[in-house]
Image (tube, rainbow, N blue to C red):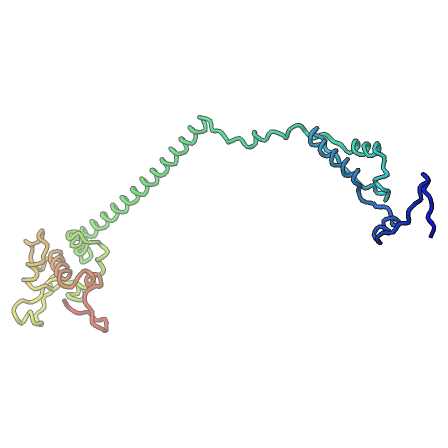
Amino acid sequence: MAGHRSPRGRRARATVGSPTRHQAAHGSPPTGPTLRTTVLATAAAVGAVATGTFSAIVPTPGDNTNTAAADEGQFDAWLASSSATLPAALPDAGDHLRPVSFLAQDTAEFDTADQHLALLEKAAELAEQLAEEQREQAERERIAALIAQGGLNGWIAEALQILELPQSLAPSVKKIIMAESAGNPRAINNWDSNARRGTPSQGLMQTIPSTFRAYVHPELAHRPITDPVANITAGIRYMIANYGMSTLEAGGRSDSDGDYLGY
């Protein structure tokens, strides 16, 4: 095919190239940003950082036109219309993050509150102490009333008091007494082995004379074996010494059927 000349008088060469070049010559114009657009946008962004302005860059218009064809002045107009001045400085957050300071008056109020709490705790301790003293006083009065009244409960209470043992043992001691003598301070056993040897068991706790003399509380040693309180002290001390406190607490010894055994 014969060539043709260009407008400048030169013969135009026939284009022999790759399909890519062929498509580039006859295809649709590019719609993405060109090198010129990219350079202008980058320069505008750098200028925005340097001058404190912010520019919204829209490289590709929405009308599908080639950005290369956009007039430089029109592009500058886009930049100018999309610019906004950044604030010079952020609001000061120091006031919001500053530590709370306490005045001397606040410290004094805390000290006063601590003093009030200490006084309340002290008052509670005193109240508990007073209540305990009142309970102890009431117990002393109860024991004194029992002793003054006399009888089996009074004798047991007095004997435990002399021995400095808890009054809570009274029911156990009473159980032993009722099993030994049925509560009779003058009871004498004339039929057991001790009686056959001439040393019968006597009194509330049914002790023989030698046991009574060995175990009676020293303060009551001058009393006879049939004295209720003295006899109880001798019987309690003998049982603790030979069978232990647990036997006394249990109300004496028992067999496998739970029946009472003498001591």
